[in-house]
Length: 118
Length: 111
Image 1 (tube, rainbow over the protein chains, first blue to last red):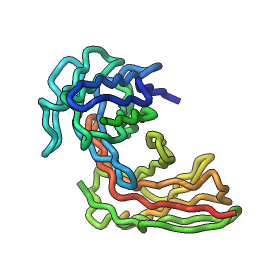
Image 2 (image 1 turned 60 degrees about the vertical axis):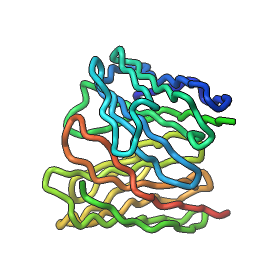
Image 3 (image 1 turned 30 degrees about the horizontal axis):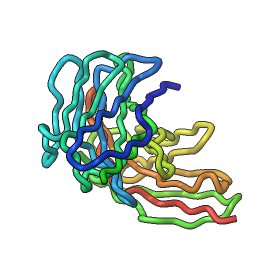
């Protein structure tokens, strides 16, 4: 099946610094990627939709200046958490949809990135 | 987007069949149903999807009645490794539509 990778898998940073998380589709091209955040014991919360070559679309309540998303190629999207604070500590997950997929909106998820802000 | 309702948690024992039912009363004609599984500290994994009647794959079966207002994910003979959170989603047949996750069902399989 289609594989999505994330890097890093785990990151610890100091408050006030910025952290970049990469999401790659390894064996398919993805015109659309999605970024989610998940707090412990909670469900996934969609943060934004990343479209290759255009600006990301953010969900209500998600600060676009704090969570910078870049989708520069058909296989790579990045999420940068700027000026991170302890409340940004969470599990960040990306997903990607194969641009050649049919009607069914099957998405493939990455393994997630655990961010801890001290 | 159609809202989904599923039990918060379920307990089972190894070797049993587990059925998780999801309600989606407001499902639209062009919506289909999809289920994902998530283990702790991992991304969700696709299990099965369908539009109506019954769908079966090597992992599970999905039963959808004629009115499509609910669906049941059936896991045959569960093992300890099936302990996970299971999410039911209703998704429009739109090539770019986002997935919105509900609270999911936390399944615990006991020895």
